[in-house]
Length: 151
Image (cartoon, rainbow, N blue to C red):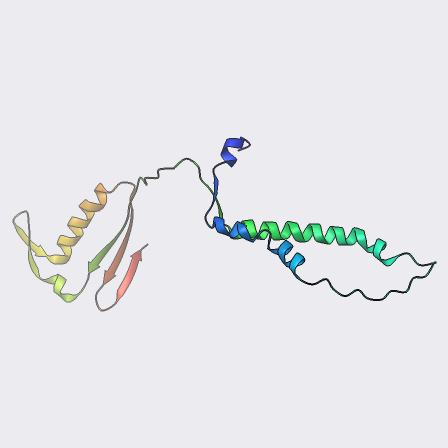
């Protein structure tokens, strides 16, 4: 990740937000200068302006840095890399089985023999589940109410 060519893949979704970078400078230049407060100068006290300069420089530097980071974050940088193809080796399946009274009716033909509908569903689902190796299966049973049998 230290290769410079990978850093060139960064793009900004909202690139126009970068035009906000000089906004504080424009505001600083366009607004009228604050009126200076009167100071008492005493020989035995340090000058107030000189004593504040290091703090003011640090404050301004931090403000510029924070503003720059905020504007760059608002521009939504996106790092594009090589596309990754993901094909899951399994499927998520939910099976829904009716358990109402109508499933007791013997009208299903299985190998020449009539069986009830619920037994036919059990047979078909057991064959289906046996063929679904690696898939994640869930069963919902319902009659009067629905019940999650297996997630």
